[in-house]
Image (tube, rainbow, N blue to C red; front, side):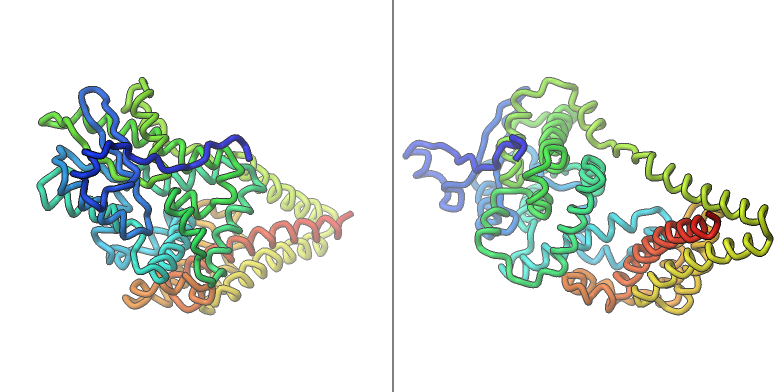
Length: 421
């Protein structure tokens, strides 16, 4: 452990008179009240998989009057809750072309984790957030979306850890797909005291301070800044705001609201930035390809037949392993052929990677049907579903072809080097 503070509930303290007038659904619920700049923020800590939290949100809205309701959601997550069918309208070509396949795949894996909770306990994670939005809108109360975009959070978390720790994160995601056992009661209790993202990577978040900071600490600061920012811009002015958040954020958010003296707009803008990618992997890959082509040029210089043999092995290894990735993904023959052709010419064709070209060929030949989008979250909850569903299979094609291309480049380099020296 790296001295990361434990996540605990902070129960609302009240005397007997207060408790007697309190709705039963709010008794013993984690609640904090923070006064800042003339605004009272009522922080209601919730469990993302608890019916009691939905009841608590509804009871709080009925028991007190608020000028605004803030929820632990970003625009994309809120839109997904309000329009569950929006994913059907996803343009796979644009997702692949814009380099968002990784984020979509990670979101699908997290969705499958949520679906397991929903199937096991009969309640959709985030139901309390939807109840807060619905309750506010029914009363004509403004809704503030104060959480950081989930894609930005995942990218910052990914880039906050070292190269080897990233394999652990990928392992956690893959384990959630392959694990078909029911989620144990003690794990549910952890979920009730933590954030869904932190729970998905619980082992690593508890041992990695940078990862904890990205998933929890930074979001506490971001949400506190967004609350102050919204309060400062509100017209007419607000005096009392209900803030519905996961109980794991309760202590940190309350502390940030009380103590942070920085400019809220500047803080939110800084935390919303995606850190730049590390340059060394890109330069390493470029260096490898340049070294291989230098060896091919040297082979031609020594002997035309030797050079032709080296060039043939470059095509064979890169194209062959990329095509193998498409085959393992269950790709159509056209997407397999596209992988074989695109991988060897990758150095001369900047832009969309070989995995992207093969995946777009797959999506063009086997266009996803409405039923694929309808069953997507359910099917990716089991590892075989990635081959059964056309949307998931297209994403799988992208990753396996990309991995195959990388393996092929290294294999070709080793083989050509051995043939020359």
